[in-house]
Image 1 (tube, rainbow, N blue to C red):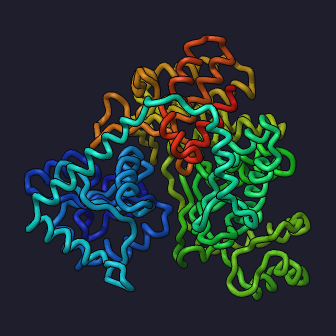
Image 2: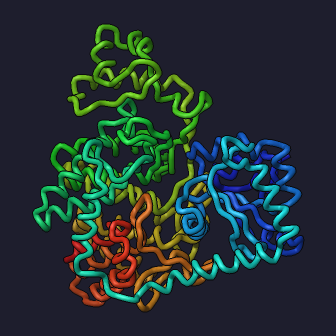
Image 3: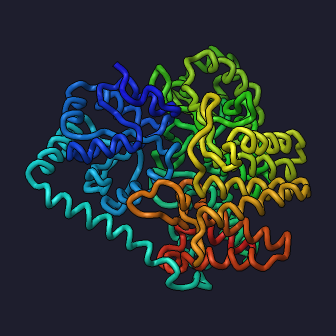
Length: 568
């Protein structure tokens, strides 16, 4: 019997509509019931392409015994983090503050007033190897709520107060004058000299770090900074993070050498990597073209918008769609198989990757394998179309149209903005965030406005059409009206939106650049284009809003520093 998710407009929520768990979407109805029955809330956040989200759904949320514990003791609320990035951002901050890390699926236990008292990510169904099982965790939490209620409520209040006060560090000092130097030096210390990238596994592409290093290298003649960016981008391209057969890049690698990915492909990763390849130029330009071709052939919808993702898991299991063994390659390629297997490291069931070999001679072999692979059961698409991620794709296509002299890419960028302006506006013209199967909804968040503004300015730069410049000015006026703090910076949620346990303003980057970093880049471009000094003032306010945070952790703000360098 379907639960309350059956009418959702999110593939992720719809995938849980037949769970025995009595799920609610994020809604007033859920929280009113929690208050009326004095029950804690189980908040579960994930997304459609996520491997571990699927795993936990199969192990726990499809299990009758687990569902019985949940339904008896909690009000369960399921959230698509791509549909409600504000909810995800607030509660991910909680998780990272409490545990030192985060990820998806994200699970929190909340009081009926939505204040958190526990946070974690994936849990196995049963206790295993010293790791608490999900059923045990739930039962312990239910017991704590029944027998130690006041202590739980007090803990939740303290957590919320501490996180709310963390915003007080904003505006306390200007951005340090040596912040760019310190960020570049810190990245050099974290750089993996052998494999590219920064830090330990799991390794994420983080193309905005490369963009900062490229810009820093240009302005300060730092060959080392450029070399770090180029090596990282090359290793990402050569390794298993890149689907050499079908194109595009997976979300992250579980190993240091970029050879073992989790297999979801996200629109935002591929858009941002394309932009970074374009900024690197030279031999990286074909990589951008290939990636944009993948987006057009795999994620583009009939109406001109781009779908969100390709799932990690097909009916055969996670990643099986992408793997080959030597016998399959021999059957497919005949006399070319031995050389191909040696170059792409195919032995047993393997994902093709190379180590800086020239793969151009294998172009026809790769195309043949791609045609054969299409006969396998393919991973599903998340057909949700998101404003912000589509705008990032428009940035990539607009920039590529100039650097690759490709008018078709320019048409694609224009069509994306046309789709946003026609399908993702309400009757009053206000920007919306999500389109799914003919229906648009959810007022846009500051990141949607930020990436849209970047796309509008990228098209202005590509075409010199002042209509796009006017559009960017109008977008910024909307940001000032809906999100702006007069001291500087844009909040995640609009002034008239649902207010969560605290109102979040972010300057630090995650997998993609923060909204405020992109706003700083864009209003600086508006000042350059128009000469209006209030745009320069707004840019300085954004930069200085996060001065103390940049001072303590400069590498977390690399795109903000990139914006500072671009507009110096």
